[in-house]
Image 1: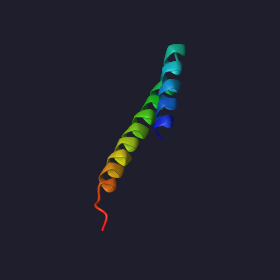
Image 2 (image 1 turned 30 degrees about the horizontal axis):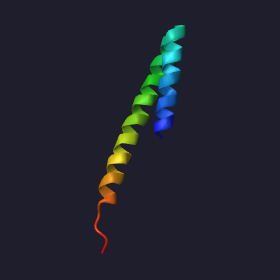
Image 3 (image 1 turned 30 degrees about the vertical axis):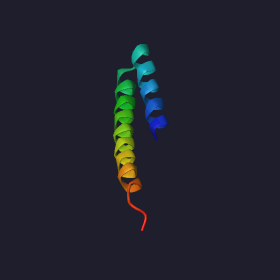
Image 4 (image 1 turned 120 degrees about the horizontal axis):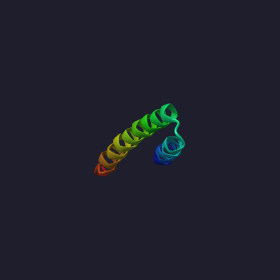
Length: 54
């Protein structure tokens, strides 16, 4: 999922350089959402991985 966020960030940067403001804004927004989802899932996996074995 992090790779998708980085991909959309790169798309946003390229679109911004080329002057496509609407596409750049949308791609940056998608990248931000994917990064937040990645962070939430990462923290959940860290917490779930620390459970003691019974």
